[in-house]
Each structure stands twice: as C-alpha cells, then as structure tokens.
Image (cartoon, rainbow, N blue to C red; front, side, top):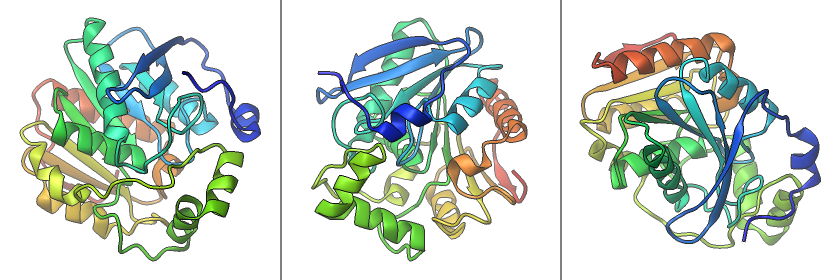
Length: 270
C-alpha cells in the first residue's frame, strides 16, 4: 500500500512544483514509491534525496526545477520518506528504489538516463550503478565511502535516530520511518569500482560537516575510469550546496559526459 499519512513536518514543509506529473511505482521487493516528473525536454535524470529528505522539500524542489531546464527529472521519495512506503535502510535497500525509477524512465521512452543522489541518495545511486547498471552517468554528492568511521556530531545524532527505539520515534515525527534492523552490505568504496565504464562524477564540500572530504577521495581512488571529483567551498553537505550556479555547472558537465566527453580529473572548485 502507498503511505497514506505523512508527518506534520513533511506536510507543513513541503512545496509544490510549478509544473509536475506525479508517478507511482513498486520496487522489486514490493515497496511502494511516489515521485514527480519535472520538465519535459532532454535526457532523463533520476534524483534521489538524502536522509530526512523528500522530493518536495523546499531546497530540493528549487534544485530539481533548476535541473529541469536541461533534463526531465524523475524526483522520488526514497523508502521510509515522504509519501513512499517501506522503511529507510540507510542505503542498504534504497538502490532498489533507484533501479525502479530508472526502469520507469526507460519504459517511458528515454534512451539516456543519468542518476544523481545526495548523501544517502548518493549511496543509493552508487549501489544501483554498481549492482544493476543500466544508466548512462552517475553523480554522487556528499556521499561517504564507508558505513562507519565518522565522528562528526551530525553523524552521531543520525546514528541515535536510526539505532535506538527513542530515536526512531523522533524520526517518525520529523518525517522518516527507519527500520529497526538492516543489512550490512559492502562498503560504498568496495563497489564503486564496478560502475566503470559508466561515467562517474563525485561532488563533495570541503566544508562538509557530516563527512570529511577524504571520503570522496577514497571513492575516487577506488573508482574506475572515466571519473571526476569536484571539491567545492563553500558547499556544505548535500542540499546545502544546491544553488542555481551549482545546478547549471552540474547540468553542463553531465550533458558533456552524456554527449561523449570525458569527466576525468580532479577539480578543487565545484
């Protein structure tokens, strides 16, 4: 069944797109997913938010609408978030959500499909590209290379939200339904090498307060060619860096890659 209720936080803080077509679909493991198609021209772009996000969160709406100048964007609520069903597994099963939307875009006639994910969504697009494939380019923004080893205060707070009964109750109040248990799949850095030869762009803020920029470098070092690492400041974590200027830069780089250009190299300015 589709999620029939959402938290007050999600309901109050959601924003409508200026023009969008809703979609619903079911992931391979039976989880119901809800999202919106935004834009009518260009290749397909599947956008995946991070933990505590949803596809109608204000910053995400602004970013998706910017990207829709160049792409038809399929923005989805990942499992356990927004109006989608299921429970959040923090990257373990979310790649199935990405894969379902990629297949939807293909079934609707798109010959070119790129994926973009932020933080947890970045893990999801990396895993989908590595384990399932079928995409033409991948962008992971502010994604960790490992499940553990992060000592920042925000990560400690998220660990409490996801690993304790009290934290999961708080999480439901602010818009996420977390599984009490989830698997321990391979580390993102252990699967990223399987994405090649699909082009990969990694984006990370030098001032990311969740995950140190060294996480992006770990992913970059383990990835195969073609690949590119963009390190920016100021950028922050995930949607903190979703400015119109970044949207245009990312769109142009993606289109260059899709058209056969190379993403190779490291840039110290996103």
